[in-house]
Length: 172
Image (tube, rainbow, N blue to C red; front, top):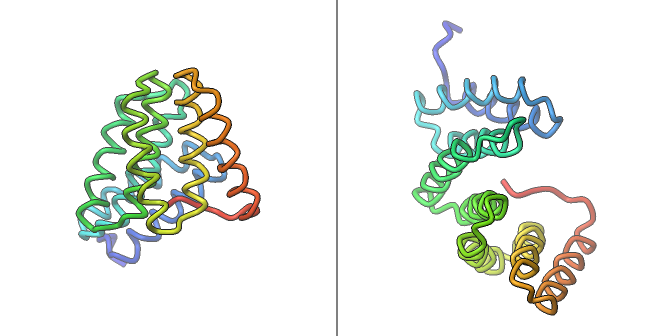
C-alpha cells in the first residue's frame, strides 16, 4: 500500500498494541498504540480509537514512573468515545480503569462512584468477568472505609465469580 491508513490497518494496529501490552512489552505496545491512535483518528475508527486510548492509559497508569494525569485523560477520552458508541461494556471497563486510578490516588469517593456505575452496567449486561474485577475494587474501597463486613462480602462474591469463569478474559 501507499502508507495511507486504512480501517483494517488501524484495527490491526490496535490489536497488535493490545497484544503487546498483554505480553508486557511496554515499549512495543506504546509504539503500536500511538500509531493506532493516529490511524484510527484518520480513518474514523472510533471503537478502535477508544480501545487504543484505554491501553495507552493502562501503560501510563502502570508505567515506571506512573503518569496518572496522562492516564486520566486517556481513560476519560476512551470513556467519552464508548458512551458516544453506546458501548455499555466498554463504558463499564473505562469506569473501572478510572476507579483504579482514583484508588491509587486515594480518592475513594470518586472510585466508589465510578465503580457503582460500572457494577450496575456489568450486572445489567450479565458481564460476570468484569463484575468480578469491579467487586474486588469495591472491596478495596470498603476496606479503606473500615467496613470489613462489606469488604468481605464483596471479595467473596468477586472470588465466586472468578472461580466460576476459570481463566477467561477480558474487559475490553
